[in-house]
Image (cartoon, rainbow, N blue to C red; front, side, top):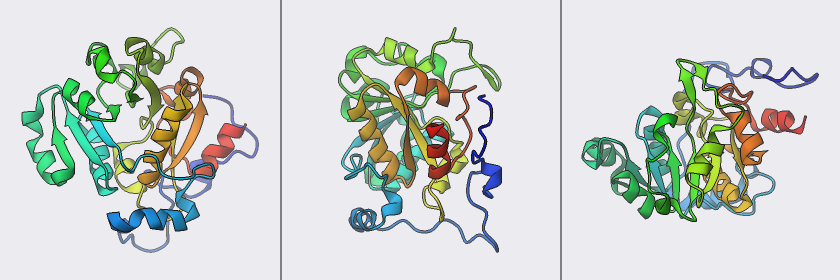
Length: 266
């Protein structure tokens, strides 16, 4: 953890609750409804709060996203992607036959497959499995020239970051899948926060991106924006990924867009 910088904003200074949401007076009335899919694009164009300053259009809206790992975090991501108008292909270690209830819940925008099939059918792939299962999970050719979002977290024990000898966990993922465009993202936020924060009123929370391919990061940033969050670039895969992984200063620390940008600027 880096030392605190004078004047730096922290969640406890701006009234954020345990999910990273801004506290409001009076009873909560639940998340605001999402706009209909056919109007969401126009709403986003009109509302500058939902678009980062350097974004000219959403790059994620037309993409089919594969999610490998359908535990609490993977299932949550699938739900909010479908709610935002995306298609998803789901996969887990137990086989597509175990995903029937989730696919039925999500409707026609969702389908199930084996991991390699999901990689083949998806235009972008998100890894949400335990880190120790990543190596050998997919044949390298399955993710050739595809954006591979590493949303895994490397732990050496309960709550203890893994000792990787100074290497970033995403560095290893990129080594195991050298023909993919690896982006570290979507790994720092608790699943309960992820489920509701993108549609909550108030300032957007940040999701971070780290990677060596700018185009790949732009694609991931577009999806983050579609989900109602603010994409914040933490830099190259090695240095930026280490900031996000367990033991890093941005892991499990919900920050608003303004807080995150202030932190990055120091």
